[in-house]
Length: 255
Image (cartoon, rainbow, N blue to C red; front, side):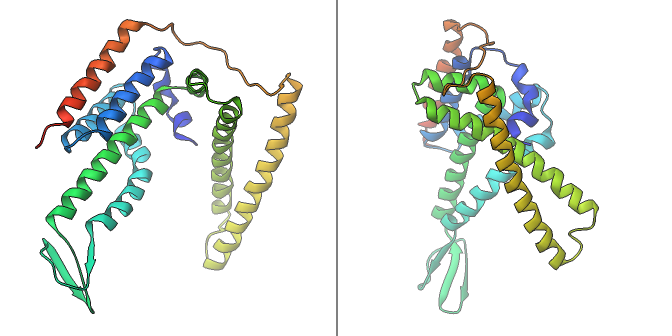
């Protein structure tokens, strides 16, 4: 199941106006991207993690939602930290394989840590917006940004379809696994092919049902949600603005 629906209990904890949540997201994102040191991303990740834990998200769930993007980040950062050269170079660790020298220096290590820190800060800023804002609030923000209706509706439908297909693929996989479909290598390949084909057929059928359901309910090219959030309060925006200022000031420190 998609993370924003699996952990939607957080969405009821903060009932502020969507724009007020968005200002916090902007503060965290700019503080992470415009920093010149590793301290600011560390503070952002710590603060958002503590906020999630305080509002009922377990530590195990926090690790689960951070594990997948972190794996991609680590693969990218390894390519930055690792140095491959035909000539020997000054490094913390170096080894020779055939005619190549492979290792990492202090500069490459510091650069890799700095990049992954900024990426983690930006990632947790996005998690803050996604986990604290239901899909109708995100749709409201996109409309206020004057995005074309076609892009907004594609986002909403894609979001919903991804959720449904992930849930269906997991159910299908568990059903196959209980029937010993992945016992051998050949049966695993065959079962995986059946799983992919079943998900594809299911997506086409569900897309047709969804279109018919929308047309039967008066859909004429515009999708609207009922606005149930609190009214906008200007005084609440001073908190994220102050937070953004502090993060930007800390981020410019040379540590």
